[in-house]
Length: 243
Image 1 (tube, one colour):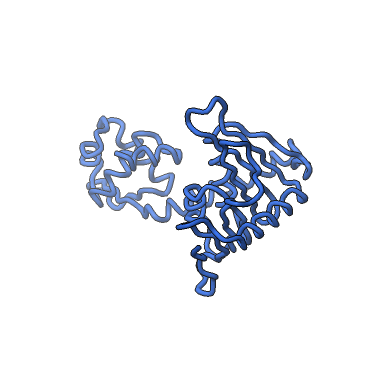
Image 2: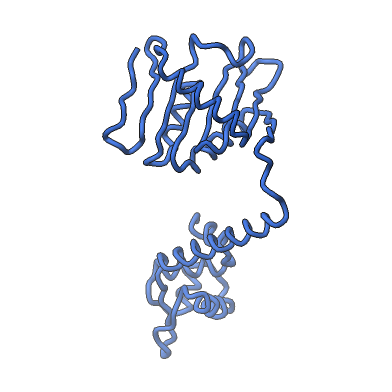
């Protein structure tokens, strides 16, 4: 059962997860019935239900006979989200003490299509104000679908502009909030080299990419293609320009 697996990932033992899902299915019930429903040895069910009670997931609702009822799964999920968020914030503080932020001028080399695509998706998902991107329509479509609402998105094709990749390679440019950028060079599956690129927070490089994409967006798009500046979730967005 997938719910049992997910509950275990949140810190419950297997017996606790199985007992809780059984309680949700049964409602108010005696321990023996919960044990049968969950497939838990009867001698283990009492301590398991007591632990669920301690976690705020179950409550005794009768003594003669002894019965338990499940407490709100939604409340548990809300507490889990809060606890996870608190742990992430604590981890961020601890890691910040251990490793300083990268120097703005640093340029990090990336290899492999999966790594490049993953980083592009991370940048898009963390965007707050502005995204510029240009290159592969298929990848651009994927990233545009992930772009948060309210983020201004400038998207363009690179056809008929000065090339920025070697022959046979497809360049892709992406910047986020004038803070981070990716320059990727994708290659055919049968190429002798793998996809490669760079990731940087260098403001000069980011500014140059933003300007290049704005220029590309003003250039006539190839036949049956689109080059546009849009704002997701806004009715006043400039529509994609057909060639």
